[in-house]
Length: 139
Ligand SMILES: [Zn+2]
Image (cartoon, rainbow, N blue to C red):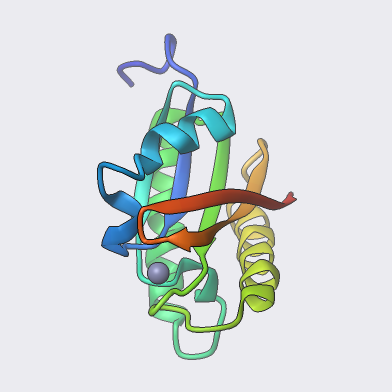
């Protein structure tokens, strides 16, 4: 695959919420720094840290398939699941975001068999344009 030899990449499963993807936030560049890579593939779904909850099995299967594809073609250095506070797609309290994002990262490790780190992180809310990336767990 193009770029594989030259670029250290990562795959991020994060939320579709526009607030994370606006220019002022520059999430992709921040994830690149956060993960110590050259570029980050994004898979965006509402409330990704809720994907192990009952009723979301079909979305979970889609996420697993998309991550599996990107692992196969880009040989990423790491995978990260990034949830965020005040999420409409997974409306739980801040502590539950931390717990649930770790559960999704752990489940992804088990189902993908990915040999590198699968990290869990949360974007902590300061304002719609200011989010702090908080590392939660690594599997
Ligand atoms: Zn969200």
